Image 1 (cartoon, rainbow, N blue to C red):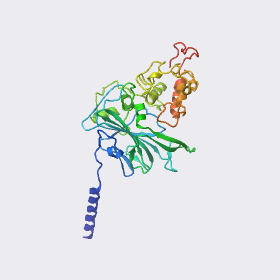
Image 2: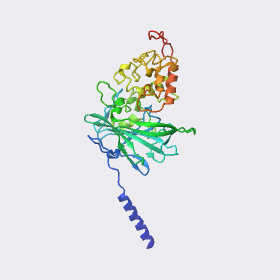
Image 3: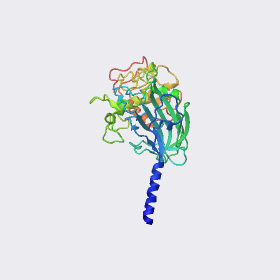
Image 4: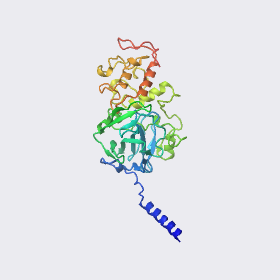
Length: 388
């Protein structure tokens, strides 16, 4: 009798606990306004010490990603029930009203204080079961939301308790210390969260319309294996889930991974410049007047910077004469600006407080492989040997 009573009591307790456990509310699209808390959207939630994705929120990864002070990023996409995105070969996909794209920036913890983070490469699919908050430090989550009038950008900064992120319309500055795994001393830096206007400096890739657009969700960036579903192509999975229409059977563009040793140096460098610089440096972008176009569609050597003098001389050139001097990265403005932390010279000018050493090394190697020479007078290139 006593045993049966104990079993019954245990079952009742389990039922009570189950009844008390609240399931996460469905994703909430806000057609207007600026919700103060990230949790108001129900895209992500902190549960059992982990940052988890809500039902219907799908993670995705890029072939080569934008550098942001070595931060790792959890990217997600949510579309309203029954809605579908439309494929575009070269531009960001056409997403329906109600779409929510999120990007959470975080670092592995280094120990020795809340501000200590590790500089290590992001592991493919490391967020497969959500992010373990005992192992990572959340910094910010940016939302791109597709409303009737267009896209809006909303930056949210995570609190010290790591259980909520609040809207930071004016941006924020987060002091951190970054340590390499080799045990070298941690280096202080300030992680800068962009304000709403600064978001437009990258996402308004058309300098005429100034309309915000996503950067990452393009065919050439998404055409890769799905880290969360190995053996499945990300674009094919979007079609299977009913989230993408118009995907062609063949001819889908694909950018290389910048750190893929099996890919050509040319493909790796162009992919890196495309995602880090091409949204501004293109024929329609904010840097269109510079004449330096670094998007993947540009192939003319001169437009890529070969022996091209800068539009404006001064601090940003480091007294160098040309954007790219074939065979001489040390004399090229492109490398100088990528390796600089001077606010008057550094490129990109937003989104980083550190130098991406691996990225700079890649572009150095790429320029070193170019052939030809520049003439110091007349800004003309040497004969047609100046190819790469």
